[in-house]
Image 1 (cartoon, rainbow, N blue to C red):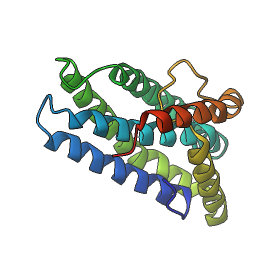
Image 2 (cartoon, rainbow, N blue to C red):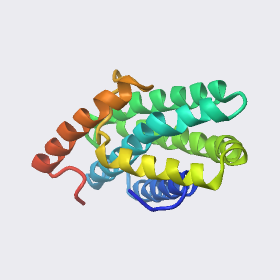
Image 3 (tube, rainbow, N blue to C red):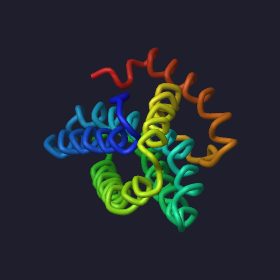
Length: 186
């Protein structure tokens, strides 16, 4: 959850960690109760990562990258679709016949989103920002992930200033719920 380095290195490390979680869930047989814990684990990381991107990465893309509004809008739409699926998964047991198909859709959508960010958005941002700007953005992303919610909130705002105002409060409530329930501790 906080790896150090510039924003691109930080987010790419997050991407690799989530891909490892996807490998872990795909190695478990359908209906296996352990799949719930892995879904919770990748949900926590995806939500934190997405909130941080929405608070800092996409506004920077809008500001610095030519055509950045369209890039950011596409990424926000990807996030919204995945967040709705994660919310649906949150209330599902691994024995539910829809669980595995929904996990497969999340994995597919996230992998496409990651590939698009790494192929298009990250290089575009790296071309227009100085190393110092990328480092400062990485620091902001790391701070945001520490305060971010750990559960999907599809109806919450995904652009500033609303997301920056509401995310820390939702994050506090989510972390309290996780502490009481034991969620995310595998």
